[in-house]
Image (cartoon, rainbow, N blue to C red):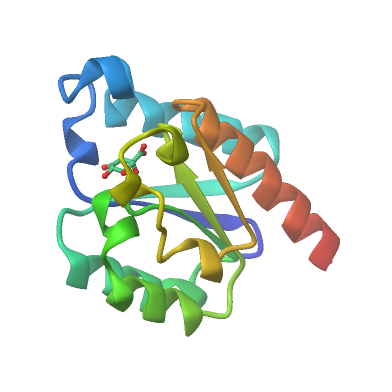
Length: 148
Ligand code: DQA
């Protein structure tokens, strides 16, 4: 469990590959999942990768995470900018949180500039496509190492 991390993906991320490829690229979520599992192995981390389009399911995942994981990496998709429920679940969760986005949310429409996740997170990585997840996995590995 010490080396298990949970990656949570929010709404519409299951559509990667065909969804706005000019913004999000051509990689599918399954391809990003495979990369994350392999990046995790390089740092002796076991990665559990999940996706849901439903806010309540994401809240449930966060509430249950301390039973099986040591850190959460979250790309909450559009819920990043709207969800006080996900914010509250993360606030109540005693695990290190790392926020990720494929795109640079600060370079885009102003409604994407506010994140309800950032104030609960150790840090935020955005703008590097699937590489944002890689950087988040490295950050988690370092955080967990510094805790031991
Ligand atoms: C996103 C950015 C969000 O603004 C958007 O709603 C998404 C994807 C990203 O990874 O760049 O669904 O989280």
